[in-house]
Length: 640
Image (cartoon, rainbow, N blue to C red):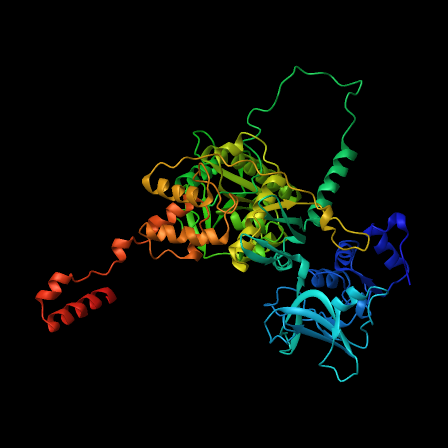
């Protein structure tokens, strides 16, 4: 049995060194520590078994462990000290896609787990209840604490054993079918991790389980902060490889850089050198806007060939060895992202300034792996493909070097010109690029050297340096929030997110929620006064309901202190204003006055929905047959 010394007990690299040095075969820890181990070292076959217990197991952890330790068996274990530590087990093999978390499992031999309601009656499958442990492992009680014993240990009337007891775990769970169609226990969280916000009872563990399903996250925790309370998600992105690459770059730069201030250095006249530096930067985030064909045409014109009088070959705005221009541009257009162009692959003909369709599409998920996030936001991609045959005939073995130089000149020019047309470009390279020439039915002499992902940007982004961390984090949060909105009701989606390098852990390796940093109070929303009659009506209703002196168009209902009861009252008030078809579900998707005004404008008004009526005076002048015929006509008109 191996243990760690206290000084290095929090060092995953040290744990991995012990595993390799002593050929450790069994690992026993909480999931968070196993996740740290999975990020260290290269794959190994030493570890054969992982015993994981004491906390939620992220859905991403099993694959991460199997990648590092392919022969290891993974076991999820649970229980309580009051019931001999472990009393439930789940071998982690195949996970059903509909499960939000790793199943808690099924009882160990001579143990039992019950899901009971408030009347201590068994809950049917899918119905949540309190979790109780029974069997031979249950303790007799707490030493010299009879009152606590009486509250936590109750008679087990379902057992045939005399004086058998059940231990109340304080956890919630439910029974549901697993991948083998047999019932398994799903852990729903601790009783004390349930919170109530805006009238809704929320299980924080359910939100965390949804977050941990996201492939871009390594860890996640959810807390409540502020007054009025709001949900805060603390996130650790899965960026281990990116961090390692960044550190390697810094190390290489430090090693290769010469010391400043050498005695032989000759000072030059001062010059800022910043002119235009922000126009050429890598944009890792693009606006969700359609690129115009005109803007794209202007960008491509940077590579256009021009016939120059007296020159044997056409010239372009960038150099090429022997003016051979062996690098061509191939354009991949994303569906409905470039106005006037269908999705597909095009070749740019520089001499005619034309686009030639050559393929329907390339499988984006196979091309972009490292840069998938950026690719998903982009409107187009430019591939720089060289034909080495003509340049090899002239320059022999130097052909590839000259082709790379030409691609670099072209990429630099495109990036400098893009911002003039409110376009941004991001240079990328992927292992999958080697397959592009064959996918496009090009000759073997063709080679994809580089690519530029592109899309619309804000003009202000070219006036300052936009850090990769800024764009990556913002993009990540937007994707996570959108993903949560598909899995959870709107009131369970956290209002604010915090990116951390790691989650604080307690001495036993569990997430220390008390040590999670407090978020600063959000900046006050810029007040936007209502202008139209409808805007004034909506904000006026808000002011009356929430008893506020003023409400702006961008204020958030729950952040102003609104609750679910007041939301229902708001629904009634808006219906009275002439929008009877408005539903509570629609209202929860529009939680600012501005969004509600837009929603109401899209709904039919009461006049449009009203069924024409027959007046009483007209009825009195008509026979019963005439009235019935009129009603039939009205009903027929409404159904048509």
